[in-house]
Amino acid sequence: MFRRLLPKENSFFDFFEQHSKLSIEACRELNELASKPAELESRANRIKAIEHEADDITHKCLDVLHRTFITPIDRADIHRLMKRLDDIIDSVDSAAGRMNLYEMTDMRLELKQFTALLVKATTEVDSAIHNLRNLNKAGDIIQECCTEVYETEKAGDQILRLALARLFKEEKNSVLVIKWKEIFERMEKATDRCEEVANIIEGIVIEAS
Image (tube, rainbow, N blue to C red; front, side, top):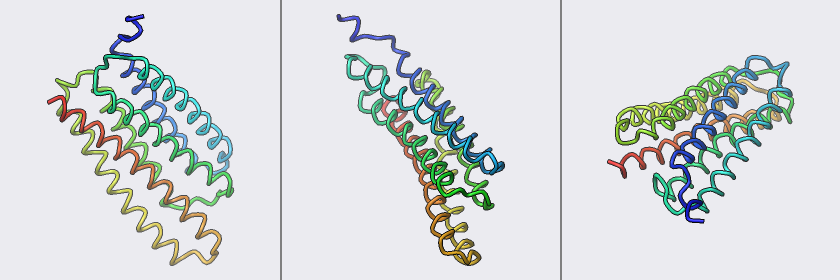
């Protein structure tokens, strides 16, 4: 029974890495969706499938956490990090789901900017996650990744402001204005989620230093 309280130390890092990989995959699907509106439904469905897969990983991780006595990093940090990683994919899925629901096939320029930004942000998150295994040696690398994520979040705020300004100025269809505003805000929320993950990772590095 005691062995169950001491699982392989790497198991939590495995969960983190599996989940962050899915975040990149979901954002790449969203990026393709922005370029290929004819594939809107199939891409949105694929993102939904990725979201379900990520949920399974989250549940497994938290189940192991509840049954584990000794963990490689603080238990609360493991819980927060896993939940916030899941929030990234939830936000991406939410944006894709709205686009599919509204049948948005006439893509706007800012959508592509957002999706490319999310690929970059999740790639940096993934790099930081992978370096957590060597926390004591890779602190500087992790910090650089977190800084890049913070920059993408700032860029996301700027894209949102410009996107809404152009939308309100140029779009005459009020229904489309409402739909695109909702989609853009969900995209920006995904960049916020990436920033929240970076904040947690940065805190883990500080505690270990």
